[in-house]
Length: 402
Image (cartoon, rainbow, N blue to C red):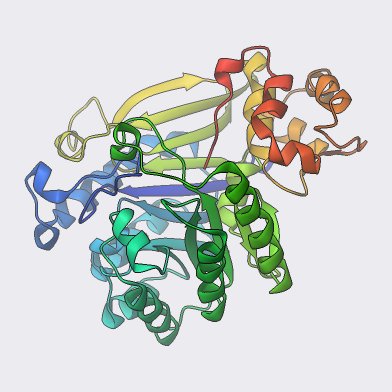
């Protein structure tokens, strides 16, 4: 059965941050709000909970290799190298790793030092994603970041000295009072650090965030268009190729983990608030795709360890008539699109079911007319929500994915 299923990834969530950023809608918590300080995070208890959480999902992943692992947050670099060494060793004892596995750790400048980077590399982590966001002091302050531009530059240098040869830099644009020139200055500084990958995405005001409650002054729409156009040109001139709406990479350095998401692959999700998507073939030979999500609050998650109820907060089978949107909302983020044969291979459904939903999008010029590939047009990439709405009858299902 494993040979017929999509590639399998693993997402591990670490829910703690030194400070909650005002734009962040991820499941992140300042340690003091849940009984812990950054120097006293419950590493041993969280490690045990993560492994019990994984054990509860193993039945749907038996016999499959993990192709990629992504450790996100929160701020994963608050936890020690020894924690990840023990965690990764225990995971591999349960599920085999691909020989070329990609293992990414998110790290924030201001929470790392040279010895920690060396320890993370020794633990088996081979890709870093550094949450820099900006190098400008006033914009870092506006975003609630705890690091300076100089600390961000130092973090990249430390990671290089520790042996990391695959580094992503996270940058944001459309920041409070940001001009096109300031946005280009951020990109220029990032390029000077020679990362292999750059995630460059626009600040959005998400519900349940401080910025949503008290919105800052953001650039006008014309300035945002200038930033996007000029930034795209600057990155491509530097040898970075845009392969997803907000992702640029040098040759052969795309995020394999995120590619698996966007290509509708499978992923286990463990940790407080983690989400997963798993395909399996049931006892009647029917293809099933299930989404499941875990207990969100860190203290409640830890209390589930040893509880017969397990860590699952909810799960849902994706219905056949929902699959065209579920598939397209990921695949259409990719600038090259995906082969149509991937639809059948990863959903177990005939290609004709998808094609009938795409005719409207093609007529609007939002979708390329390609016989063997599902690919958004340049216009479709700019107006992805409109493209998705033309595929789906229920526009409420259309949502952006980071």
